[in-house]
Amino acid sequence: MVVKPEWLRVKAPQWERVGNVKETLRDLALNTVCEEASCPNIGECFNAGTATFLIMGPACTRACPYCDIDFEKKPQALDPTEPTRLAEAVKRLRLNHVVITSVNRDDLPDEGASQFVHCIDAVRTISPQTTIEVLIPDLCGNWDALATILEAKPEVLNHNTETVPRLYRRVRPQGDYQRSLELLKRSQELAPSVYTKSGLMVGLGETDTEIRAVMGDLREVGCDILTIGQYLQPTQKHLSVDNFITPTQFDIWRELGESLGFLQVVSSPLTRSSYHAEQVRELMKRYPR
Image 1: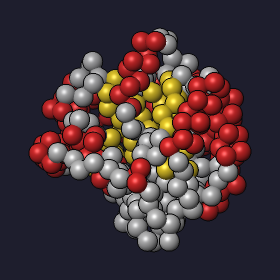
Image 2 (image 1 turned 135 degrees about the vertical axis):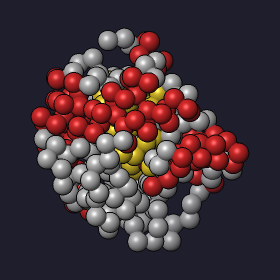
Image 3 (image 1 turned 180 degrees about the vertical axis):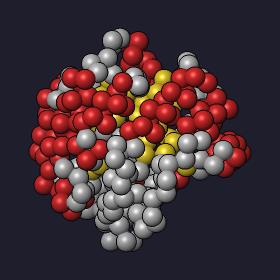
């Protein structure tokens, strides 16, 4: 068994602040990926009054062996009140930047694109000053669905590559590396004013050379923002950690990413796709579109 190193220890959260966020989420019957996916930064983010909202869930139509989101329950019909409730939470929590993600909904004709749009529109109506990031699945390669989401003009379109091509069959058996790259490429082409973003998990047996190759591929398709973080095994039934990457190596990847032309690289052991996502507001001032 691989022993978790000291640098992965998380400070205890201020539970009073966490409780306030949780109370809002429960009152409005909303899911967050922070809770559903057992994110290690939940204390820090909830203390800061932020959350990544998980829509159309919590049941997922895929069974990725690294992910702690439930795939055994049957997905439910979309709730038409969800966008309004989500927007109300954004208002109550006074969020400057909101991240909206979803489970995979391969059972829906548009893979859930319309619900993303309804959520974006609802937030724009009730909290127009809030910038919006959508973290979307690969939509099964439905590029009409992608265009639908982009027409709603989120500030950031995020889609995670997650791992290196060699490990896709084991880590993302229902995903496709080239399809994920194509999604990011088409996003740039369809809506050049929208910043694109992707994320990688490390510690699953990939090599430094493979990580560098993926970073190069992401820049080839015009990806603007990159996150790199350590994979942590949610439970014993999930994929085990192959190795723990040192903070020094994460710094090396961050410096490499910046040299490749990414506008922002967030790379550290505890980085997750939405970690410090609000920093994009400063990026938008430096690199306006």
